[in-house]
Each structure stands twice: as C-alpha cells, then as structure tokens.
Length: 497
Image 1: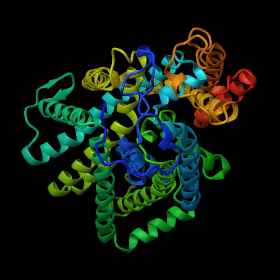
Image 2: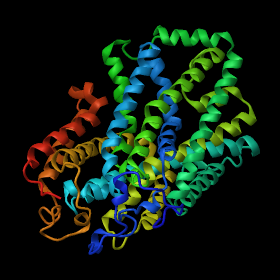
Image 3: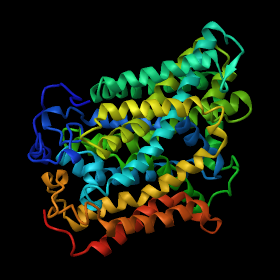
Image 4: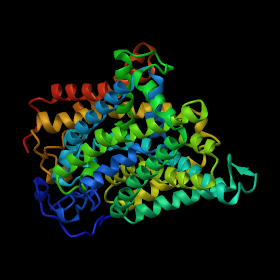
C-alpha cells in the first residue's frame, strides 16, 4: 500500500497542495512511506469516494436492522424518527469535518495527527486500543459476511455435509475462507482497489434495496401506504417507553454511537481526498442525505413485511427466508455480502493497519499490518460460533469504544483551540528532545491524564446502572469532557508551530 493510487494528479484546490512528499531528517522509528504525508498526486479520492465510505458503513445487515427498529420500537411518529436520524447524521458530519481537516491538509493518518496532542510516542497507546477493537470486529464481520455466501451456496447447491467443526459446517468454512481471501485481495491491491470496490458496492446495494422495495410494494398493494401512515402517526406502539423527548434523543444517541468508531480515525480516509471541499461535500451526501434515503427504504420494506407477513421484519435475512425464492436469495445474499465487506473494510480493517504501522514504522509497514490484521481476524471469526459469541464480546468492544471517545476531543481541542490549526509536519516525525511534540520522552503526560480521567467517565456511563440514562451519549460526553479538560490543562503550554 505504499503506492495506493496511480491516477493522474488533480489540480490543488486548497492547502492540501502544500503537503510535502517526504519528510527530510525523519526518525526511522516514527516514519515509513505508509504513514508519511501523502503527496497531492497520489490523492485521487473525491466526493463520490467519501460518499461511498459512508454508504457502505450504513448499508450493513446491522445498519438496516438498526434503522428499521428505530421506527417501530420507540413509540415516536415517523417524522420524529427521521428528524432524529438526520440530526445524528449532521452531528457525525460536523465531527468528521473537524477531525478530517488536518489529514486533508497534510496528507497524514490520524495516528500521526494525534502525535501533536499526545506526543510522538504517546499516540501509540490509544491507537492500539482502536486497533484491538477493530480487529475483533473485523473477524466477527468476516464471519457475518460468510453467512451470506453460505446462504447463496446452499440455495444453489444444497447444504452439503452435516458434520461441523468449531460450530461451522463444510459450506460455512468454505464461505468463510472465500470472504477472508476476497478481503485480503482487496487490501493487497491497495487503497485504489478498496476505493473502487466501495464505489461499486454502495450504488449496487441501493439498487437492490430499491428493487426489493418495489417488489414489496407491488405485493403489499394499498396496505403498504396504510401501514406507513400508522408508523408516521406514531400509533404502532413500541417496546420502549412511548414518545417524548427522551425517546427522540435516544434515537439520536443510538445513531451517533453506531458511527462513533469510524469518527476517531476518519483521518485515515480523509488523507486520500483531493481537497477539503470534496471531503465536506462527500460527508454531507454520505451522512445526513444518504442516511435519510437508506432509512426511508428500510421503513418502506419493513412496513411492507408487516402487511405481507403479519409482523414487521427488521432483519433482512428473515425477509428473504419468508419470500422463499432461489433467485431472490442469491441476489440478496450477494447484496448482504457486499454490504458487510464494505463496512468491514471501512470500520475494521484500515484502523489496525495504520495503528500497527505507527507502532513500529521502521519494522512494520501498512502491508505487514494488513497481513497481521487479516490473520488475527481470521482466528477471531473462525472461533466466533464456538467460543467468542457467547462470552460478552459486545460489552468488551463497547467499553473500548468508550475508552477511545476522549481521544477525539483531545485531538480536536488541541488542533483548533490550542494550535489554531497549525502543525509542524516535520516535527511530527522527529524524536528530538527539543521538538514541540516531544513533551516528556515522547509522551504528553498531561494529555494522557486527561485521557484516563475522561475515559473513566465514559466507561462508567456504559456500566454503572446509575448512569444508564447517559449510556446512549457516553461517546459524545466522553469526547466533550476530553476536549474541555485538555484545553484547561494545556493552555499556555503549547509550543507554536
């Protein structure tokens, strides 16, 4: 992945043009070609690529189920749910615009940006925590994607032998290997191939969803509109406490939490964008706009299943099972596979790749980091059914997410409030004791103390029953607390770039 793109250079449109192609005198312990500032000629991503990053993040099996469930579980009318989803999209868009700017301007990944606030070595701890979270979910999502392939193989050729190993059949293991190899092949092709896949996958999933909605609407007839009217009137009931401001903000908090993991390391994608304007437009179209369209499609399909089958089905697999059509099963399985691989690349593969490269740049390249991620993820996914699924891995990952929340606040407060959007890029790759980002032996101990204190609050919001009402906002509150505390302890202590 040293050379992720090969397209002709685009004209510089903003400060990204000033990004250096290399860093003279960089410390080998802090530098390699994969985490170096990306030159303008290798930045070929535009609005469409960023739009598809978010489209693929939204269009997973879990994303569909989440969007559909919000309309039927909170007792709110449909307009309030749409408003909550749109507000969450706007919030994530703003957060990504903030954290993505330094990466667009200088072509550096988020782990390098974080060196300015945490120290040139201090950044390793939080980025590795993010990597651990991502590797676990990478393995899990690889397994989930393999179930879609297994569904397609079974529909075409039958279920195969009944014998199982570690909870998976022969068809299951074959499907799992196919997905693992496919994802690794995309990575070996570099970011250009990953971008190409995302560009194809996003529109393809939308096309299939629109076709499925049309089929459901045709079969449900006028009953669909009546069911939609029930949802928008808020009279469909709900398993949660009906209506109210609390339910509205629960919708917002749930959607923000869903995207939170990608927000922290969003700079890993923003560095490939040609201009800040393209990034912002891609975020606008890919978040509030795409999120609203996807949620509308999920609502229409779910409401249609309520008319056809007597209950609103929020899981796409359940919908396909009810239809019992081989052709539809194959198409749906391919769609689920594409959607799940898309989010796996976006949210779970790129973060550990750059985190490992940042850990020891002189020995670990992004390619090596990718191989390590794929290998560990393969083991995790292979053991998912037999062991990991039943030991509360979700709580483990949620806790790591809460730990990471303050990192976002620290990075943003440091870059905007303390440094006034100025970075000494060469110093980010220097271990010189007098460097502006060296602090104490490469660690900003004040920032680490802030990180620890704010993380304790975030974790408490996840685990303590007394703070359960804040659990949906643990990430936002942790990020805000990290920003405020970092600004307070670092005022007057930041060296000018």
